[in-house]
Image 1 (cartoon, rainbow, N blue to C red):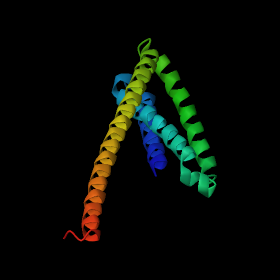
Image 2: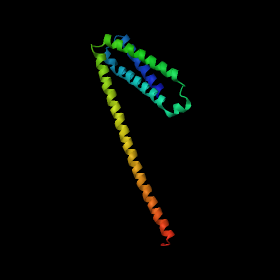
Image 3: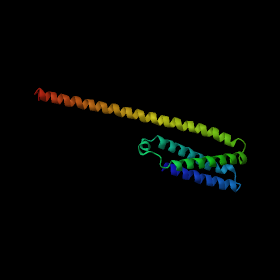
Image 4: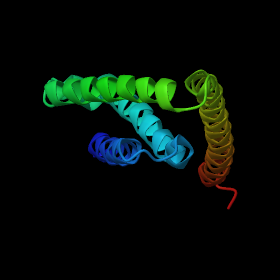
Length: 155
């Protein structure tokens, strides 16, 4: 469902941008829609990548929906090219280049945040495993001592 939601968000943002620019409005007013469009594009690419690497996809064959995903990515690519053209023609000089630079920095920050979250999750899992091991070891020791006492008839 994430792919379909992202496609819908991208199409909605694109229609807002196209309408605003077609009516001759300032590009500053549609920057948030451009951001939504480009974020949706990245979400679609990430969702397709996750689907391709999913173990469930490997089990089921994973070929259903491939054409639709490809077509959605092609439509997004074409719309992005149109947005680039509009930004280069109608926005202040260098706007698209600054956006590309900002987008790459934001992408790096999101990747670092994902890595930090994964590291934090791994550390938590390690702590849970250690705690489980300690509790399990203590339980085995107590049960062993109890049965040893029963075997030696000490209690």
